[in-house]
Length: 576
Ligand code: ATP
Image (tube, rainbow, N blue to C red; front, side, top):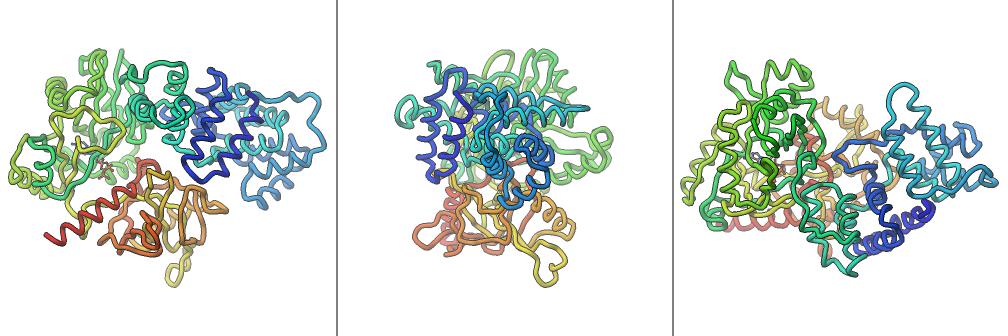
């Protein structure tokens, strides 16, 4: 397939607002591909050259892309820059400039999808001295053989700004639609994806007719994390799942540790590799005496002198301040292991929680700093509540109750795990929202170019980001300066396509920064689009930013459905 054909499809996808139509468009594109083109194409649609957990960034800076465009279009870098300023996007600038070029050079040949992919891969892998020059020449070569429309997407892709507005769920639906004409296989495909986090691999297997049921957990393929539902009382929890394990909810850093044949990798909640940051966890994992293992836990820094744990924020701050080595000596980490997903060649994700826990307790009996999470087993709401109060009294966030009979529910928020947190105002929980825009400072804040944030939650059904709050408080001066700098770099000329908003901030930004927000309550509002029916949506009353959440991406934020459930909980609480 030619990359120019891919580009034609991309421009249709980009112009589509409806999620279903978008999946149908992708299905059409996939059906024109050869089997071996499916995997690279899926990565490209995801904006990557490999599964995201490989961390292979394409990494061409704007400056270098400008140089490549100048070389190909026969314009000066200044002219390219001027066009960029006008268009607001370097991809569109390249498209415009190439369309003005009299004719393609005779030497140039058309780019196939595979050629483009291999060039992208090389660009991503190049590093060290002279690598920028080599990257520029690879991009120039692609641009030389490109149609103007193709240039738009080649440039955007190389800058890491493809922004088709397509999420993994839409790609999964597209795969099913391509083969079945409907979404009937989506669930099976999603399950396979949840187990290996590599949609390229899953798509290739699916298209080749392999059964999705054969996917299983494997070392060094991170498993998409299980998530907890919320309930608001001990009674409700026991009513829902009966006798259960009740564990401390540690406010630390979630880690998924894979170890096999002397190799260890540690993945974050977003499934990014962070092995190098935690040498003490790596060496402890190597000493477990298991052939292969995948386990999950929550890591907290520990001060042995004061016998004190630090929260996630403090742990991260300390790491930044002291560096990795000093940090691991002064404030060693302790990893509270709360699940075991794979052991000595066997996938355990379908085993009942109680059996997984029994094995976990054996493996981690004497494995400091890897220790089993603290827990009790009970079917008595009073006992659960006492335990909750004890933990909150000790400064913990709350508890997570676990259904003893459930498998590990990868990649989903289900009632296999239920969290009960100390409340924030009337709300049962804080909210994780993504920043989509910001306002300029007024009055006392005038000296900052920053006055507040526009934040969204995710409507999983439509794939849209819906506004829920304008946030003007919760930041210190330092945080404001920092936020302003970050957001300036993420500025966009227009509202991102996936954002559904009635409000228009002073600047739109690329939705990538996630923040935790506390509020007094959820109210109904005509201004916000979260869960909007007619003229009424949901909004946060007195929202304040608690912190940036580096460990979450925009696909991990609170969903509209969760907001609606929290609103119902709030109503119920008031009636009780
Ligand atoms: P929050 O924002 O409340 O920290 P979250 O959105 O990160 O939660 P949830 O699904 O709501 O994710 O809650 C599960 C999280 O709680 C896990 O991601 C994990 O990091 C953390 N956690 C702490 N202690 C435990 C535990 N004992 N068992 C499971 N998860 C735990």
